[in-house]
Image (tube, rainbow, N blue to C red; front, side, top):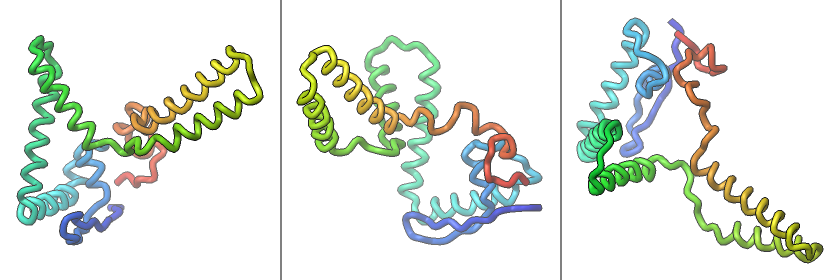
Length: 177
């Protein structure tokens, strides 16, 4: 059987674990579990889970609590609930998940704002037509806001439905075993 092994390290104590790379694709839902292929991967995840439970119980417990809250939130999202307090709780849970999973923060926007202002002022030095200035400014700001939105929302990072295809059908370097 062809298998790619990896070594991972606990981010809390630096303990090393080795196991099949494919196990992550099963655990994270990219591949369906196949007992004939994924038994070693299941044992690998049991080992790292056991480590997390035994050595980092408080953090593991908090993670399990969050996963339960997330599951409950997804269930309540299936129902129309007119109670404003519950709607607020649902939105707070959505916001909490968003805060924990956002890849990139907007950061200090003053530098970008200064760049945009200088660019617009330079354009205005050579152009006094208000309609052209307005059109230029709109394009400048729209482009900047679109870039910021795309960096935060990552709309094209992963094509919809791509992760459920077998590796050989999605141009992936993963070796199917």
